[in-house]
Length: 484
Image (cartoon, rainbow, N blue to C red):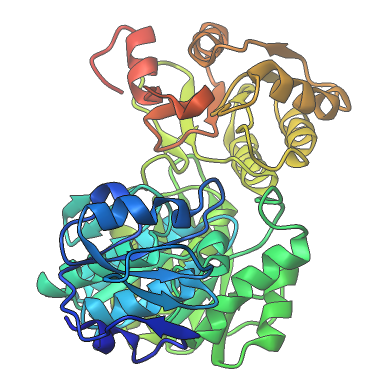
């Protein structure tokens, strides 16, 4: 593609050099650059891409997009912009031919529930005969084909490459998780969402956002790019976003008046049943994922699909066919007289939802194994400690992904919260040993919650060292089984 054709939507400050150049590849990682490429100098959270422009040119880059002037050879075209992230998003869209121009795009944002909601939407769309692409935390999928996911929402360049692959595979609809980071860092800039979904907002990511208000405003940006919104109005932030959303909206909730709502809830160990009311009618839903949070997730998915014109019959059948989502209140097949549940809960609200659900059906004790991630919002650590203590009969406080923090320092932040409760607790820094201790404590009727890791099969240690750590495998090994 000619360089000048990639700039049609970009407001650039100046250009030095020719725009009449054929560009064969685009990159933001200098290590990947190939001949006749364009290189984006992205100022990241840890590195500044301007420092690697020389390496990119040595590998064959013919043009660079910059936000600060740097010395470069005369033969290299310099495109000077105010925001290289925004330019990368818009130029990537052009380079890959705006692949989602004719494919409905559904974006789901919120603190909790994004992954489950996208899986539920995918199930409903496939029930309606739509080939569906999925982009999110656990994996990226085109139909049943899985593509590894490195982050919740890919960088814009990677995102449009993935969109192009999905288009080439004949995808009818794409549903994706849209994180607050991606909205703040313009990864989805230039994307037009047919439907935007808001699940909820509770404390998280305050290591990146300066306040909950700023966090909410980041989420709200999705609805500036959406044709229709589906919003949880039982959530205070949902009501605020609803007031400022420029697009038309469907609301959902249980407590007040909403366009989509649920009644006659019955929660068991195997799932939840409820009557779903929509503008197109009502029906009973039997969902195979327990908890009141599952009802909210189902309503969000139903709202998104209703906005896309999917029938209530397909919504019901699609929801009921979902057997579960990896690492989301996942009941392991241990064969023991106690239950072991794996969940990704790593926020105060997420942990409370999981523990309240377990508390509601356990005949014995709730034993909770959890920790908090390093290099992330430390303010939520004592809050999570108090929540764990409030709903558990025994807490085992351990390590999660400590990253560049000392695991015991993180645990020390959790302890003041749990000490405010009467719950007995033990500290076992090594997570495998903590899981082993929990299994040793398990008695008939108990529920053991392994919180925080969910679908993850690794731990992140100092200097970004990643080790294999799959809690399904660990539980199986500890119980002497091939798998659980």
